[in-house]
Image 1 (cartoon, rainbow, N blue to C red):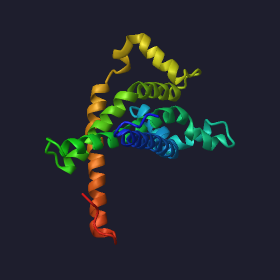
Image 2: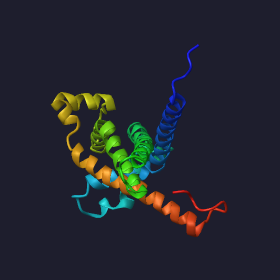
Image 3: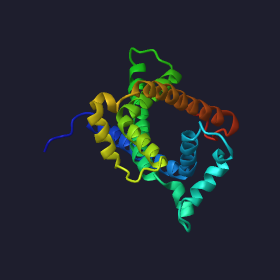
Image 4: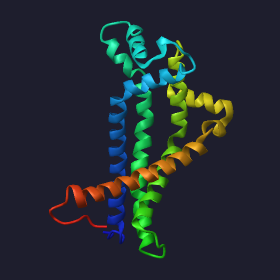
Length: 223
């Protein structure tokens, strides 16, 4: 019989929490993306036709156009979710990685702050969120690029739609890894700032709410 290594249970627990955050973040992203899919489709059509002018380019007219071109019946409703499966394939890993990375970076920064790195909790949350946003984009940017290409082809009326994997392969043939990550630097910078502010402001708002709006009867939240 071999006794477990010191800290192995703690390490296993941390990885289990990371996996839980990945799955929960991915599922939450899928649900949210599916709910707002009609808004996203109308937005894409509007952006593609933004250079055009006239009464046919308004939001209400676009909604009516989608319904008219659907073929009638239940498709008048389901066509608003056209292309959602492709978006969900990208959203699940993106938000899963983002949430799991945020928790991972928080644990690492907290451990460093207890050692030789004097970082306040607020800065820790911002840095962890920024790292999470950067990591999520780094891991899923090729999928996002493929999703954008497929959405453009769909709204331009392409008769044959390639799969997401087929689109990624096509981009790879065009320029290899450089093509797959074309424009990723700007996206990663934006995601790092956005997610850093998002997670930090969320925790700050939650603390304020618990302290002043809905105080916890068991006492204020721990730092």
